[in-house]
Length: 331
Image (cartoon, rainbow, N blue to C red; front, side, top):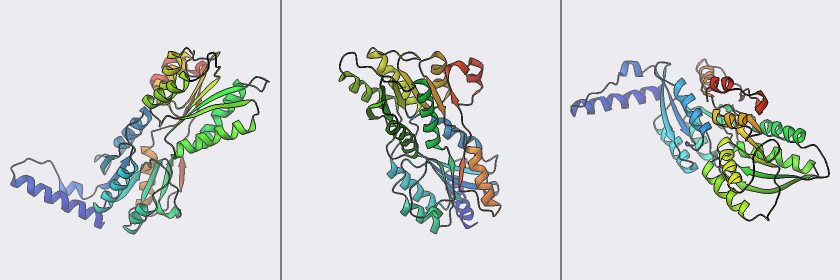
């Protein structure tokens, strides 16, 4: 491929510069020539899930496995992601793996990648583009289904009575696929159930610190004795911040008090679930590296990959968790 030769040329040039300066280099152009070059643009490291997702990619896309991985951390800014994609296009990588922060705003840069004949694989979140041919495939979770699983649990835990079910909703990064799917499932359920009362929707941005801040501020403005039945957090880190804010404001978290729902089900969240502080943990599997590699190998074989690949996931409650189950998990 021309892109591989371009990367090889750059590596050779770097080797010459290093040699002229007396700097030792371990670059091996002969080995590099056969590597598949993958440019990966990650959202950031805002959550335990995101860190596990990055590690899954780094574990798969190694030189030992035949890849050269160029990793970019966008630090939670979409403009950084767009700049990174353009840099990968200039570097003529073989594939671009993109974890989009939000769904909108991608048509132009993905068109540039298409014109450069570089397949783009979306991971975790989706993009909202006019032409779906701008990306080769999407690998991730069905976030609407995750939300539906959480809603079904609330319906069982809080059966219809004359008493209201008071819900606080902590949303993730607004406009992201995970936020849109999990939010839609809850909002549709609230509309179906006359007894469900949505007290507030707060922007937690998928982070523990922001959730603690916004929920603490909200709780401080509630009248004394205000009852809260469910806090629906759109990821684990939000749940951690919510539990801290609730407890500091006199609320207990547990089966017979405030029921905290979370998504991701990382090891730390499952520990809190086993203790009873988290009522329901809906899994969102971050270990997507092997699935992304299968897409790349399909394309390398000259075949067209399936457009959407959804990872298998489950839910957890306190009664079914043990220390052994939690420690066996990879994230």
